[in-house]
Structures are given as structure tokens and as C-alpha cells.
Length: 331
Image (tube, rainbow, N blue to C red; front, side, top):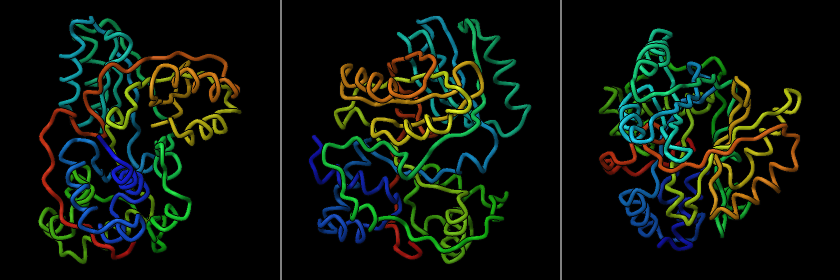
């Protein structure tokens, strides 16, 4: 069972996934040794992991795909998709007859090979619909925060990463690939470990991470097994919203504590919201109280039965190696 201290550490890492143990301890009023011990347990038990990810608006276009399959084949098709490096997450939804996944192909050829060739020719696939992501809300106030005992506004402010001004022209370069690949697996790797991966000095690594983060090219996301936080009910809401209302509705739902992800899509359902709830009654209240008060034309609900892959990591994959203690420099 997770206690209040565990939940405070989780919430703090949502604010800054690379905050040092000493900084977390100072803000939360817990000893540094306790923070470090609990972090390792939470990570090793698969409750949380920190990932360094490219900001959606700064990378190649990405896609939401809904694949209707023979129910008996959902597990096998989902696992096959999860093994692909261009697929970031996979969920089995709608009674086991549908797979929803997100893909970020590097080239048009890679996109077409998956969406126009491989999947349509798979005998278990009945049909598929692919939607381009035009905009999504990630990080900061758009994180899932439905804790029973959230941090105070003062604690959140104290944990906000301090970023030095960085030119907007900063972008990810080919030489950054090893760095970004390592952070996508473990966002709390220390400078020494990242230096070993890239072949750079620790100073250069720290400076480059700071520059990418400051320019909004890189952000740190906390992946949470919310079912272990007594939030076992998940659903994808496919909403149809008037274009003039999209930004207002999307922002409102993205800031809702129960919302884990919100994005604007092409297609008849132009807004998707991933919701995490305590039970079906909680989900019902979200739909009626939050969605129902907004100018939404129509809605479809897809219950999530099982997550196969999330934020680029297979949920049944090997545990991550223990990272170095994250430094406080440049925060």
C-alpha cells in the first residue's frame, strides 16, 4: 500500500522528474535517505518511472490509431505493436475487440509501411482508422494530479525547475540521438551515465540537457501505474467539438485532475481524453460534471481493459537499472 509520503514523492516528481533527493527532501519535509529509499522501491515495484521525452510540438507528426481486431487476437496484435520502436503506447479497449495505439514514425515510408501495408494485411485486423495529432497538452498543469492529499501550491512552486533563458532556435540534432534515447528509457540517469552513453563530458551533457529543456524541446514525464493509486478504471473519451471551442474545451479537460492526456486529432472525433478514475461512478461524474458542462457535440467512451505499452516502455518489460542521483545544478 502507498502511504501519504509515497504519494507526495510521486506528486513532487510530476513537478520536476529530475529533482535531486536532497531537494525533494527539503520541500517535502522528509529525510533524504527516506526519499531515496522510497523512490527506489516505487521504481522497482513498477509504480513510477521518469522518462525524458521530446516535446510533441518539436518532433515529427504523430498518430492515434484505432484497430478493430478479432477479440482472440487482441493480445498478440497488441504485443506485436508494442515491440515496434515507433509505437509509444498500446492499450486494449472496448471489450477486447479494439487496440488503440500511438505511433511516431520517423519517415513517410515508415508510416505507410505500418498503416497502409502491414496492419491492413494482418488477417486478425478487421479495420483501422488513423488520426494525426494536431496538438496535445503535456507536462506541468496538464499532468494527472487526482491525489487524495496533493502538494500545496507553495511546495509545487518550490519544486518548479529553474530554467535559464535558452534561444528558441535550439533543436534536437542527430548527435543528440544517444542522449535522447537514454533519457527516454530512464529520465533520472546521472550526468556520468549520460556521459558514458554519449561519449561527451559530464559538463557538456548537463549543458545540452539544460539547453534542450529550456527551449522546450525536451520535457520529463512521470509514468504512473495509477491502478496502484486506487485508480483502476481507465477510459478514452472521443469527443466531437466545434473548431472554435477546441482550445477552450481541450485546455479545460487537460487541467482536470482525472485527465491523463488530452489531444486534438483529425477525424470526426477531434478531441481525445484519457481519463483515470476510482470506479465507474467516478468516471460517470467526470463525464456528466466536467464534459457535460462544456460545448461538446458528441462523445464515445472506450474502456481500457489493459495497457500493453506506455510512454515507449512495455509494461511487462525488464526493470530499469538504478540511476545516479540527479544533481541540482541548473534546476
